[in-house]
Image (cartoon, rainbow, N blue to C red):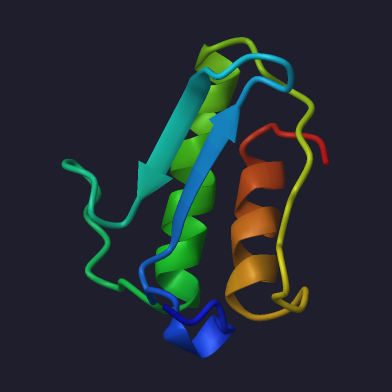
Length: 92
């Protein structure tokens, strides 16, 4: 399997894990139930995921996070996701 950005799924998704524990705190995807976004792999989908992950994280008591964008540049979907998460109350 290739690890190039083009070979990855186009579905925006996010997860939060505790730094020193193997625990997922929150996760979100455009494929989650209740997500009304029909925009899977575009900026609108990334914005929906950013809002959803921020809402779940704040509800779990998380305010400060680290964005691991991997090999992706900070523009387009990555920037849309981050902007929506910040608007939702997360600090990067």
